[in-house]
Length: 482
Image 1 (cartoon, rainbow, N blue to C red):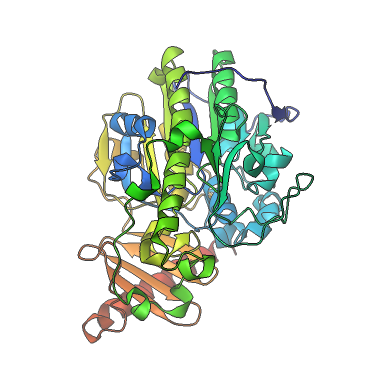
Image 2 (cartoon, helix red, strand yellow):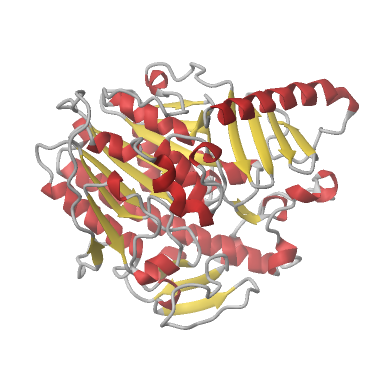
């Protein structure tokens, strides 16, 4: 697919002028390009073992950097996960535990610096292109607005405005939500959770992710001597699943392989653990419709991957890779039919595990099995760029793994949702719901989580040990809020 130019349709906010804070200014060395996808399952990437979806750009980055096999989101919903990422704090500690509370981020963070603001305060140029903090998709994209942004994080910020569900092409609504197709409105139309598909009949130049890549490349071309922290947010593969037709071509629905099924899979999953599922959205017993979803999701991932490749190519062409850290990740995982679950909001593996690849100049490519959390990125990038780590950060630095990927920097990873908590150790995934029900999976023997061991007699000692470990973790998080 050839590169193209397009009329620029991003909306730039005014530059924010603030005083520099602290004495540890940025070294001459390291820039950061931080790329985050929306609703991207690690399971969909070739470099994480997917044999169907084609992601050559992200795979290329993985071959050049450190790929994290066991990285976890702090909350499997967009707003809280991004608030945790950008504050370096657990969702409870920053006080954002739902999309609706995303607007409380600025007030709750107070005078503590956000992830990018910490770099801005050390004389970095910081820019947000598209979705970094929470944005409602598709509403904030069709409206071309900020969403609940944190203005102090950025030197400049740029929004994308794109047609989303109104894109030209072949349309299909695969799930059974009630939709309102009012082109004059942006919110409350039902598209935010619907499997609505558009196989576009253009080259995609009007889409948000194409615009975001275009603007990122433009910014990179203008940067010279000043160190920068460029954050680029792609909205795909969040629904609606919109991509040009050429990206659908490699994915004939009838050839899509659905996840393995287990008879009576829900029989040992507590009611609180039954997530957004096939019965609820009209997929039950309809494998053809599920294959259509997979095809559209993979097409959207491939389209997003193409935009990542454009940015990587620009870094190479501008000779910036030699002193630029490149990060690729997602806000959380995503179910694609595992356990007959779809989308996010589950505390099971596919919903909470995230792709994470970090390429650091001068460091050898590798793969690490070390447990890691989303909030570790703030202290990790700070250390790699020789900046102090702010005291409020609750993550740990992953920097030692770039010299020895076999090190253990964490013995556990934690994730929460309004209905419960997950504690992930090297061997176990322990889920405890607010109603007292539990799940326990042996991740070495049962990585797909088919057999809940929480009620079995021989595992009660393990359950009690992990329950105590979880309570200690919650006490640690809660004490940080005092």
